[in-house]
Length: 526
Image (tube, rainbow, N blue to C red; front, side, top):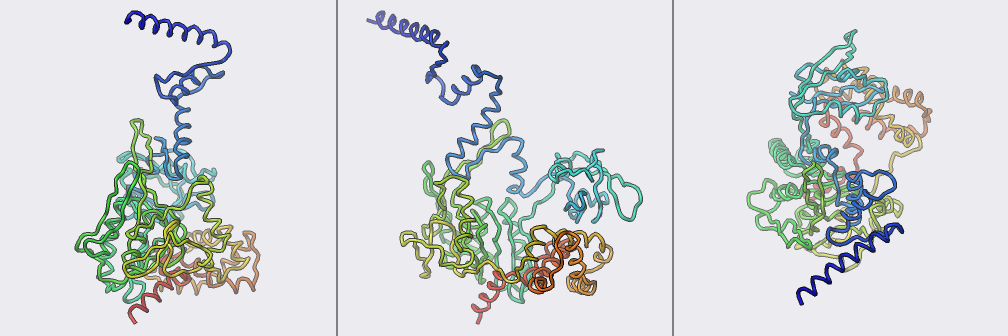
């Protein structure tokens, strides 16, 4: 019997081999399950395709397509992109340390990073980069990301730059040693009223929690009794950082968030004792671009009746990604769980129609009028939850605010739309700063700067600039939009001199959501 079985096996192998040879001429190829199907197909294509193919390139193109079938947030990161995509999460990068913009096809330094590599060698605001390692970067329409690539590099390496300075006739050459440059996630922290502090956070990176704690202590030193936490435009980041921040607002033992997935058992994150912010009144600002970790913060504080959420419905990303780095330097960010707010809400919006529809949903919201009227968003009773304090909250697609603030359309005119679409306010602020830099650098306070801007007829000069750049003067429409144009213009100029400490205190005047938060916190006191 064993001999008979052996003969049958050998005969079967021979017949399979023989018919495989016979069928090769008819373009039939049998893939046996000795290896996985995907590898077999790639090997088959590489061996038999009519033209030469690169197997590595096929694999690089196949992996993203596979992940796209899962959800919009599972992602393949090629090795060439890994560092750039990871920098915002790490809160640092390696480079020369300058804030810059492009003016008239030339990189112009807004400000060197304090005590950074460029400041140490003498780079000044207003310097124009003409050469980088003997390559011309000015007047050649080089994309800004190409210039940045030339300036970034490993820590300790050097880059030679040729700089044009207004007060010097010839090009000045500097050799700059690249170093670690911090990426700050707390844009600004200041007292917006005598009792209310304001903190704006742009992402949740590895350094965000430490930055936040420093900001809180700074504001307590200035008498803060209430806090406005601005998470508008914050697309999220690291889950553990968001959890650590929320912990500062809650008493011990409160549920912050929990995660659960097919291969991941439920994990609860709860608060510990000793939070810095347990005794202050809080308002959190959200909009349609607040996502992920931002929604974790807002959801936890809302569900624990710890903060007022003010603004518009958030993006709706309730998926947790895990990042795994491959041996070749590439990485996969794979969705491994959903997160749930303390009342049990999953705020992940639907992605059943594909990634394009998923991201275009914000445009759909706008077209449906949701940015103007909260009631245009309808949720069923199955998505209704109740907080311990009796507030009704909803799941199924973002965090719904406690207080809705519509998109502000006051002061909007065709004139304003035209100058905005051309980026003229921002462009003129940069040009204006460049022209009057010596005078502007002498000012120590925002009040001094603002008085100069008014006396120097800055608004009138901008109107002339706009006319030269294709938007003719329209007195009626300028009157309608004067406040918003002037406020933005002054704020952008102030940012060029005082960084965000100059921008935010000036722009707050036309920020309706922020003004609403200030008023609501005042009501709590009364």
